[in-house]
Length: 253
Image: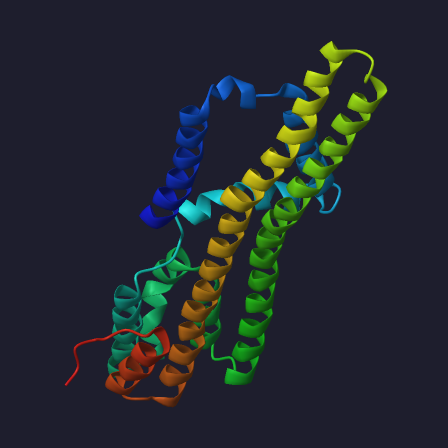
């Protein structure tokens, strides 16, 4: 669990709610037409911007901001170095016994190791890696784009709601009883749009981007390890290289 995401978002929402309650009734800030315009309209417009499957995957990606599937760098380095030691001591074919373990850790790693064990050239392995990483980057970038789009659309729908409310007010200037609902829609929709964009969508998009860059960096360690095994590089040298790549202090002298 990424506690920073939880504390940050929950803290921002709580502070807003408390500020509202200190200034009056929270019920005055609940308006069904405004919710339909901003939330319903925002999600509908975002859905129109992406294929259905990619949109749904993007929305569900919010879970990654709270519970990212990022490996522990120390554990990853140790695993890859031990794998290199085994290949150097027993030969590359000895890694065949661990192929299921590679796939369980990461499909990309499993595919790379399968190619290495099968004796394919390092050029073919690199080409496969680059293709897999490109697909992974596209997938992660689309998830980010969904939240970035929502962050842009919610305020825009808030402004549309404001215009709707103002038009309703202008049409009922002779009826004082109708001015209140129109003013509520006009003001609250803008508030909803600003809150949802700045205290949900934008932070989620930024956190997903952070993890995307981290995940791709960690996967770069795979191809570095494959090359080291193919060249017979000393495992200690690989450990230093991976530690530098991932910014980890291995406690080496």
